[in-house]
Amino acid sequence: MTSRIPVTVITGFLGAGKTTLLNRILQGAAGKRYAVIVNEFGELGIDGSLVVGAEEEVHELNNGCVCCRVRGDLIRVMSGLIRRPGRFDGIIIETSGLADPAPVIQTLHFDDFLRQHTQPDSVICVADARHLARQLQAAPEAGAQLAQADLVLLNKCDLAKADELAVSEIAVERVNPTAEVVRCERGDIELDRLIGRGAFDLSRLRVPPLQIQRGRIGRVPHAYVEVEEGRHGDGLRCVSLSIEQAFDPSLFVGWLLRFVRENGEHLLRGKGIVSLRGSEKRFVFQTVHMTVDSGMDRAWKDGEPRGSRLVFIGRDLSAIALREQLEACLAQVEVTP
Picture: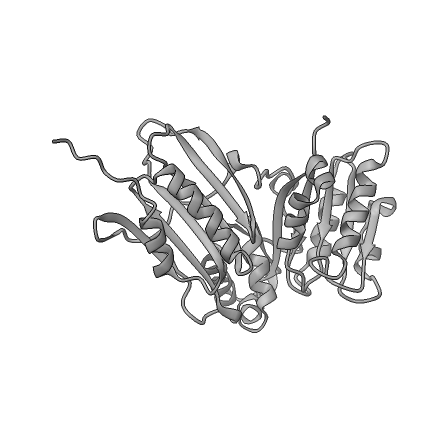
């Protein structure tokens, strides 16, 4: 079987600068071949004609968001690209400014042919540093786009005031604390920070340490933080938990699959590095709605804290319920007589 083609998804709200970033990537491709799929909400495609450097490889999906109305077209176009003689170094999908990128990632997992021949590489969210905070309050789509991203580019920083930049960075941190945040102007960022990130490779899963005070509830040392209630539109919330005690493997895995199955409609994103009783390796997982990718990662290093870090982003999440459910999955401490 040939290696799978990496797929990069560029998302972001209307006018954030997605096409400008796409052009930056194509202009710096240095001989590599990328197929480009541009999705626009309107019936007439505009962005596709603005893409430079890949005139023969640009495919437009218009008249609807790629997350819903033209999802079947996405499968058709990608399948055609994969079957074409001569391989691409990657496929780049620019979603419409109103699209939720999660269904795109799900499509790559659920369609048998695409799953065998493609590999999600990264979801990059381009955000307008001047307007992001207001967009989050007014449009749930902006929050969903941030929630799926592993890299957030705060674009148009040259046009934003210092307080607007600070507010935007805080907003990103509260919606998606696992995302890397980079300030930029006109999408000007090094290509190797955009392509080949391997963010959907479980062995490269990034769950940063939580900047929180540790607490103790009951007998279980753990702490959690969450997005302020009502700060973002449509009930979007982020719950992050740090738990020092190891989980029972069968209880935790069973809970994870059940939680995603029952809450996947409202669960935008989940990531975690988990300590399981009896294992010398880290267990890692990530979720996109009802899609779960999980497995054993590298061994714990000498001196490395063997605690678990879990982040869930979605709507109608209850931090209290999550905490209680996870506590029920903890391995029992053996008491020596």
